[in-house]
Amino acid sequence: MAEPKTKQTEASVAAYLDAIDDAQVRADCIEIAQMMQAATKTEPKMWGEHIVGFDTYHYIYASGRSGDWPRVAFSSRKKNISLYLSCSLEDSKELLEKLGKISHGKSCISIKSLADIHKPTLKKLIQASLKHSLKLYPPTESNKTAKKKK
Image (cartoon, helix red, strand yellow):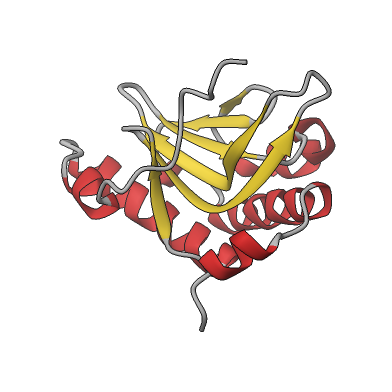
């Protein structure tokens, strides 16, 4: 069975954020990182070259394929910022309607700028995603020890 392509790396999150050319996008990504870190109480980690993820869970599909993935994550893309949330966005329609200018797929929200977004609603979506993820994939001993103690 093929290995997942995107895995957690030891690359520097700060270096990734510092390398974002557009100053406003960089500031937005830093603020999103702060929101996700506050929600998860974990340090950010790079996943592949372009995804900043928080906390980790282990999944196993019915097919037998398994891997690890961040509970919440984001990435600065050429045209937008992608937010990766593990909640079913279909179950979060009310929050999505209040969020602002977005496009979304099954578990990804794309935004141009935090200025277009209702930040308290984004924080609620991050919390909903985290709650959903913890319900589906309760913490294991290995990812409990990865959490930063406060």
